[in-house]
Length: 277
Ligand code: TTP
Ligand code: MG
Image (cartoon, rainbow, N blue to C red; front, top):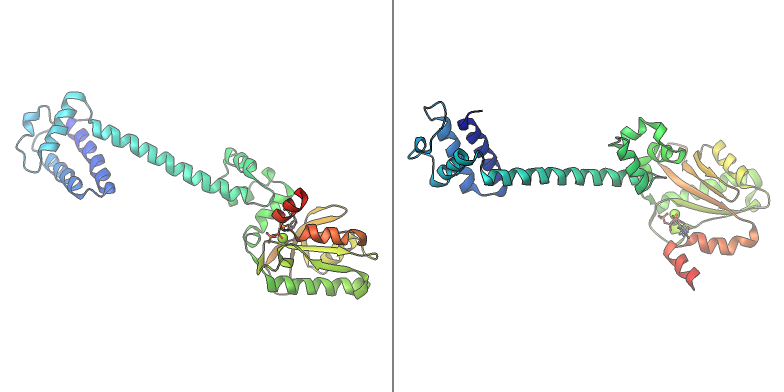
């Protein structure tokens, strides 16, 4: 590359840099210098005397051209190039952190899983959806309902939902066949909740029959996990309302109702304090 072109390239870097810095005076000075050098009626710049007294080339520009002719580079430009590389790395890190944060918010994932997905080349939730081999059953459900599961559930929805569940269970075993309370943040009076926590006791029903009944009525749509005393899954109000939410059902024998209610009402912080006492 000719010295002339190399100097223009260098000055363009400085012009852009000063523009970004909001230094209009230097930005314009380098802009004028670039125009002046382009307009020079010589094939290349070999000697500093060729650019002295050229209109549009100020003292600073001539000094920089001289520096280039003597050393093959301009220190300020090298400094700016390093800043640009650093800035690019920072931007990359910010977007990596943003993606890792999103990955870690998938139900059943955490920071470690997020890193693992990143290392496997995943960069978006859609990438994950296209790579089911990387996902557990719970994470698949988390991705399927990602938006809904990150939407707060209004208190009124939960009130309606529990009435529906009560109605359906009463159809199976009668109103006196079970006891049901919505615990968690709903029971603490919150105006919205992250999920719905239901506590049930019954001599006539088991957790399995409860879950099967709610599935049959198209209330429970997905099972995340099912143990003897605890169900975790996804449910919705079947007719017309296609907002899905996370439901936990805890099933306890009657004699454990009080302790269970205290625990399942929380909050988590309150439980930790209570246990410490
Ligand atoms: P969550 O449903 O996780 O919490 P929450 O209902 O208080 O709040 P959110 O609106 O986000 O759903 O858990 C239900 C209860 O279970 C919680 O209030 C207390 C208890 N719990 C613990 O004791 N320890 C725990 O680590 C968790 C997650 C819950
Ligand atoms: Mg809850």
